[in-house]
Image 1 (cartoon, rainbow, N blue to C red):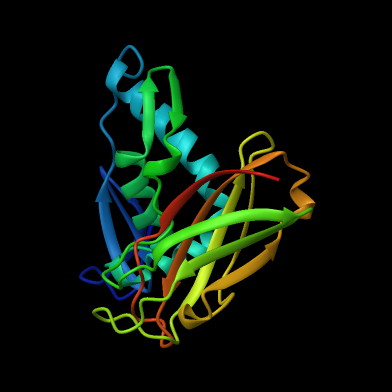
Image 2: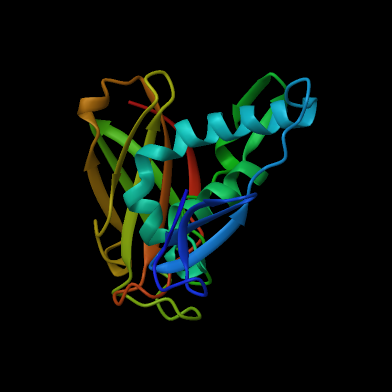
Length: 211
């Protein structure tokens, strides 16, 4: 049953025949119901479902971060949805059913803002990661006030730590406490967002770090 909001010519919510009406981002939207396939999903559908499950489990803890770092590319969708779409197409390796995340291909952010030069990460103190880079303020749209964010993933426990606004580009370094991961190794990513939040870099995968 569908509910008419403004009479027979207005938007509706619910199912009418093969069409479903609903609201998304305060807009009235309609979509068709999927066709029913006899005999279960096709091999291609099984592969796609497996990729979706893998990437959703991987990225879901980063919803808040990705809604910021992919927001500039998200047209009529959330930043998370845009990030998911990119990474499910570009950052999965292997052959069904043995898919895995291709960590160097993962992007935690996308944009035209220049990233820093020669980023690196070290763990000279237990539970602390120190990110360092060469300041390249003045290159293109890069500014000293661009703010660093990092994301760290523990593959063994499937856990993330991430943080925005850690340090300015001009500072050349920042540190983050990852002691709660109790991990031996973590994957690390870094990126930058402009002070007004309108520009963002492509994130950089720095690599696997021993803690």
